[in-house]
Length: 338
Ligand code: NAD
Image (cartoon, rainbow, N blue to C red; front, side, top):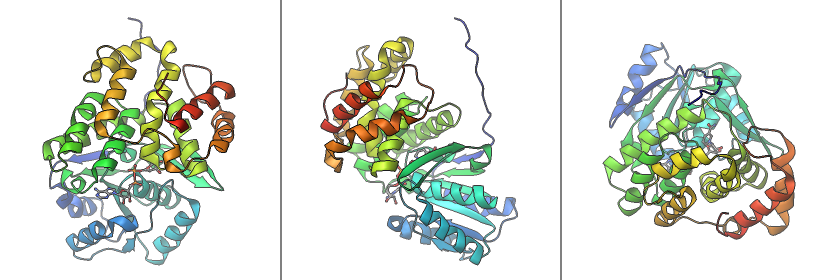
């Protein structure tokens, strides 16, 4: 087989993986001579971030617990003022992609080291990518300096992730994945049995590899659609990825036969048909399949298609407004991918 030309940036981050590894945070801070970390979380994960503060014996600059989806600029501004007020020498984000996004936004502007403790499967911790929302538009940029220096994966912190969020966040990982099999096998087990540590560990392992993959490649139609729907229409991130994925793959399908073959192999019960396999997986995860269930308005479909087509990005099939508008309509209605 011919080898296609490629560009590859080696990820220089340090990854600590395993149950109980959160206890290594103090050691990691010490290793980097950091003594005044600012801890970040969402309002929903205040108890987890307070536990972290206790574990560090209160030796922190402070806690900022207002991280929110799609990294809006006004929250970043507020967090930046707090960061300088408390003279933080580092940021520690504990949470999903929203909290990690805020950590990245602070770190890239201040140069402060960033340690991530991910608690979902979104994979942001492994990427040099930051998506930020300002004036209703989500803009994504990539810079090696955005990549967090240390990532601590501790499965124990994921046990409280609700099954619906586990499922959609896991499909978000599948959307950028090299590790589809470990996710596709473990996610249905988590939905049936959320306390299954082995399945959660496997999903977290899959999320790590998926994030690593996303950090090394360009993003195509799928991610662009999700960023449009999330950034400009405030659709929830993981749920939107879950709804869009089979449609985005079906759109590109005629142009990527070899990839579809590999995808079908990775999906249990696919019988050689990747889209069917993905549909079977999503059914077993009991996830929402239509965007209208999240309040997306039919009259916004055309505007979404315009935004999604406005910039050029790498995609195997040409991205044009007409077909994209029809694709978004199917996503909105929850019709099967084709
Ligand atoms: P999230 O971070 O918004 O979390 C969703 C909710 O689940 C929040 O309320 C959070 O506090 C809660 N939660 C998280 N972990 C929990 C746990 N273990 N127990 C209980 N509750 C928990 O969701 P997400 O899907 O991880 O992140 C979405 C955001 O991440 C989006 O803004 C997206 O653009 C970004 N993202 C960025 C990248 C990247 O590479 N830059 C990759 C993936 C996602």
